[in-house]
Image (cartoon, rainbow, N blue to C red; front, side, top):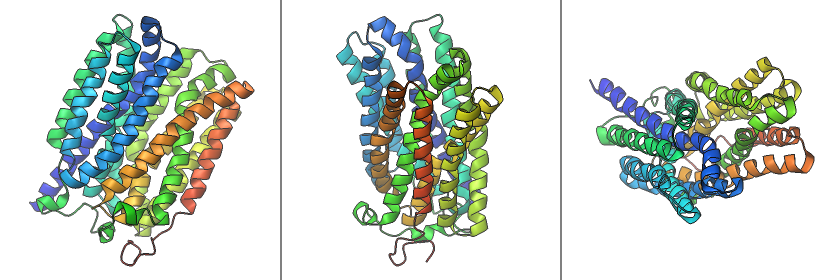
Length: 423
């Protein structure tokens, strides 16, 4: 009976995380669809309109750091509740704006706070319920919310905009965000100890043995966290260059129509729906094979950016062929399925669960405060400088390769007695 109850509580945690990730990536995926209608209706330039998204990501990064403190002190429910209110208001209030300053406040501040409460919360909550050889499988299920949002919400908004105003579409999204995150708040659970439960997977691979009193200051005096940040930052820089530039790469370099290039972009999301649970199972099998979670997670963090390297090579060499373009989309989906959850798995295997919210919250602030802006900027800058998106792809390839090298250098322990699952 206790095992059945533990299974149910764990699955509720995964379901809540799925809803949170769905809403977070719903914001990211739909902005590209709203960009054109906002420009035309409000008379703003592309740079002015995009500034709202850039500022939203800055607020998101700071809020993600703060959410770590909330998780460690009061659990996940307050974060999801705050996300429900501010996330819904971000779309609703933006749909009412009449001026540019109002837009910057409503979209950047409200949406930034709302989405910032979701990412760290979803990752840490799943990690606290699933460790060892079960974590990646469950996170893969939760992370499926991201490509589902990329596919479903983008297509839904595009369909609405064919006949209705962008303001109507945003109000509809406000309702979706509020209902989904209200459900996540209801489903969310605290740490397993509150229910007299142990994390799933702790019997097979004892990752919980690292669960001692690590603080932010003590963790950030060790190489493991900075190595993880370096690997993730380099990968995210390459990833966001791909997200923002790959559609134009297909149009400019290979002569695809914009609708065709957009369909290939959506194909990354479709592939992600399949790859995320599959690669989660693969990652946990690797952990089981080595019987040491830190080793398995590090191996996957080497594999993930290598998939990105091969994808970039395929695009540059044979990206004009639809079959090879689809192959590149699958490779990008493999990278995406492994990297974000894998780095949390590695950090959690080293530092344990008790202080993971604050430790990973600060890492998210660093990575997301730099990587998305740098990757997006370099993609556009290199095209303006050279007139070819191939140079942007070369930059992404280099960043992916450096991410894999940084992962190769990740330590298997912190050198602090009793603080690693290797000891």
